[in-house]
Image 1 (spheres, rainbow, N blue to C red):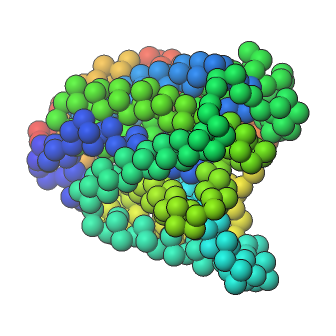
Image 2: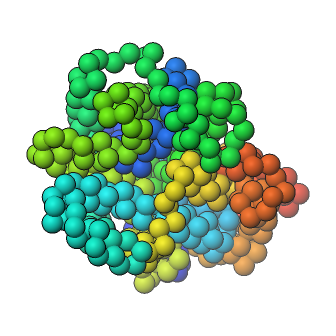
Image 3: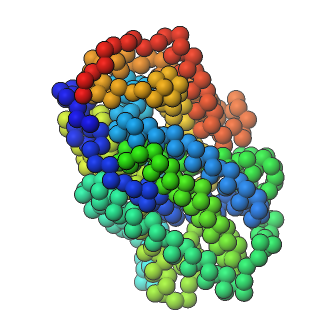
Length: 485
């Protein structure tokens, strides 16, 4: 779709509707292999295994969560296919042509946090490999910079810089990279699981981790109950759903390159419920087998590979995990902020420059390392911020506009999405109400019960969505003549 005479402050070639729809189901599938098959994805799955207490409960919780993820991603993906626009442009239809910068910047900042977390995990795999050598181990212990060891800082900066080589070549290179990186880690994960099961003398679903270790690993989750109890199963499923909070918002950044809804649905089916459950099975098997072999609860795969007797195998594992983690960073934490920052100043910031800004912010965050600590807690805290935004956007697209978005008007200052001077006050108020209950009250006060934060994303989606629908009915948007493309 060609946009005629767009407002220069709302348009550049990167933000324009997708011209080439050449992403097939395999590329959509690999969005998810790149997003899930990372050190952080494995770490979260292994952590949730401790919460569930046993293998059967773990599969039930992950299975339920994965189906919810699949349904939500389809809703967002269909919007991308129909409109062909990236997330910050789609947000203009609900928040206003200028108001959309608010949800765009929120998503961009969250991506910067995740970018730092994933880069730190990838560099940690390299550190774990290098300290097997005496000289590197000595350097790692004796040198410290910015709250980290000197070796950690060097590896972080190297991995951080490598990602820029991918993003600078544009979205088509992103697609090709993820098509290779996603499957690669599957091979290594299976190798890790099979090798550990062989060392353990086999595998049985009856194998369990001792109760005292499960209690120690889940004591800080903030949900009452013991591992395997119903409250903790719900908490595990909710955390798994919340892990994808960022991509619910901007999955249209990728779906817009697909030719039709069937392609998105097929790629999502294989990439989400099927792939997620299988990946979680491998993570669970590996966690139990590693305990059988080493007598420790090892939640990080790089911790496991570091124990390999064969240095070459350890190096191969570390390299694969590092590449896989770079895959998720490029897909989830480079693409979105690249579009988001570009949306704020289209004339000055291109897709590439937006990605560079995100990378720079992640680098600045590294000394503070806000992602270190409890995996479930970090995921819930970060995810809760984005729930209200999703609630507003989905309600507006499906219930208020009934999927009839005037795409051309998204690029014009004086079109139907101008609202009040470019801002839809109803959307901003609804998002603020949702954020009050999803983020502010559970994370900064003791007004709500401790378990509320685990479900903060869900409360944010529901409360903001309901508030927006009510406000949109009371204050309907002004009807204008559609703008011709």
